[in-house]
Length: 388
Ligand SMILES: Nc1ncnc2c1ncn2[C@@H]1O[C@H](COP(=O)(O)OP(=O)(O)OP(=O)(O)O)[C@@H](O)[C@H]1O
Ligand SMILES: [Mg+2]
Image 1 (cartoon, rainbow, N blue to C red):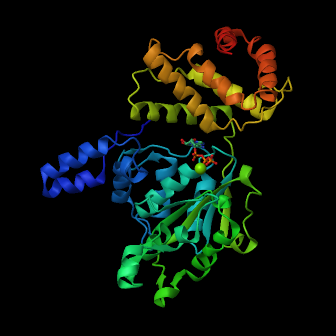
Image 2 (image 1 turned 45 degrees about the horizontal axis):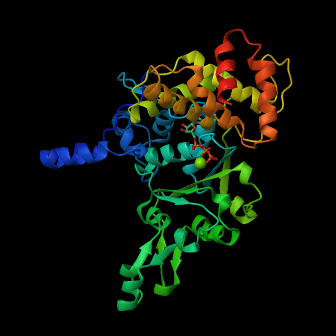
Image 3 (image 1 turned 90 degrees about the horizontal axis):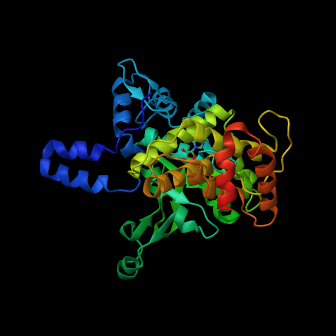
């Protein structure tokens, strides 16, 4: 199976054409980045896909919908090139998401925390527009200016309102350039501010009354928003806005195998990015963590025999990834480089016990009735007893 390539950017490749010196500087500065944008990290995969992609591309799309879905789900191209999967799960969900973006409706990725909503949104924007950076982070403090535009006050005072004094939002830039704009955590944005999106999504224009002007969307523009169902009720989506979005629900991984694969892949690539001097975790260790997460989340042991109480936290796949990852850091720097039960115990407990009273009881009961009794789990039982 192909794994993610080390960071390499198209910027570097382009710079090399006209000036080798520039290329080296760009490469150095890029390789020191803690986290690359998807379009840079996977520049090679995107370029390979573009090369063989003969299917029809919607206006202003860098790739055809087929190639975008291959980029997300992974696969082997006819020329033998392997595209690594970014999203592991139901293919149809991704196809529906991509198809939505070819229409005049925007896409809302919805689901419990840690189901790869932000991750999928970033990769979709990278594959479709070659740019995942047109991002608005939704918070309770997100203002209308963040979605529409603001002003450079020095210029505004000096020269009065003009296009030059206007500070475009990522949304405005996406509209002008025909790209995908991303709105993270849409339902955290106050409802009246959310409604700014209605004109943008239905009229495809952003009026600038101060200049008696507007920015009209170029073809290719669309919006991907994410929202978390735990935040439901913080600010409901107005029904007017709901009608303009196609909602796609990203589910928690179906099977334990699928979840183990997600954790394994992400931990491997994160470990590589952080240059952790540790061996990739043994599959068995990852499987144990995932089993614990799934059993506690579902409230029943995997054999279906014992009912369990669920803790208050979400125990998402994303948290399983960070438990293994912190364990790996411990193993790398304070152990022998191999992930062992003692390295994961404390972050595992930290992930489960969010409420010091209730969750601790739930965890203790699970530890004593399930972990203790399993044949090959004695090391984990001991490590958890010691860590607590
Ligand atoms: N089905 C999946 N396929 C691939 N990666 C996944 C999957 N589910 C979760 N992940 C991984 O989980 C991590 C967290 O995902 P992300 O931050 O996108 O979650 P989210 O749904 O946006 O969560 P939140 O609601 O908390 O914002 C990512 O690193 C992602 O790779
Ligand atoms: Mg998110």
